[in-house]
Image (tube, rainbow, N blue to C red; front, side, top):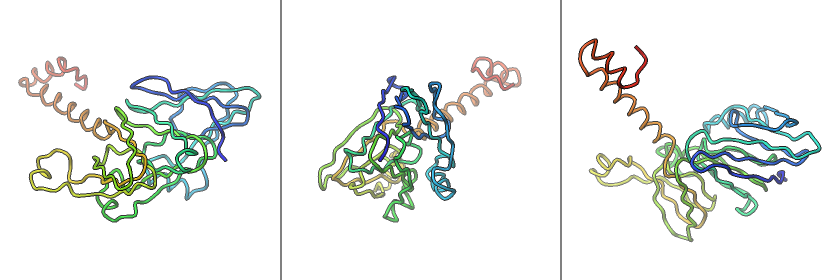
Length: 256
């Protein structure tokens, strides 16, 4: 049985979750996610269940270690965890979700002490070969609260039995295990080459709850890298050696 924790999500587009721990209660989080904690909270960094557990977590893109924050005082204490990029934090009450939920790799933020964090391989070979971000999923199981992070705005969809939803592979955040998950070719020569949506989409078939994100971190990172390269090329193209220096000054490039 997981610890019953109280929480408050703070912020709008750059969110953090503040968790209040009663005496002897704890919360588990990814290494480096902690923002602040009250005096009296003890940190315990472990593999979370042995070497094999740590290696399995690395397959999902998370760290080998996981940190548990325990309140060893007789008073209530608070600890906060921040999302690493712009977006939202989604609280998952596993008791109300059947005790289990699947989420994309890198989306796990923290959970009540007692929630099991494991990996879940997709059952279909198409999803395994072409799923990209969705090949290896994280399974959160137990009875308590878990928190996942997502980029941009969040869309929550409750799929009915047999209802089908096609989603960009990076925009899927989390879903109920009852939802059937597969990867489909986008179809059409011009769609595949010039559509700009990639070659594959996730096909989700209900019933079950699905969470989507509008801004996957991979998409945000690609735009930042692309803009950085463009600025460097423009600064170097102003003209000659002096133009390169002048372009660096105007473009804010201080690498010279």
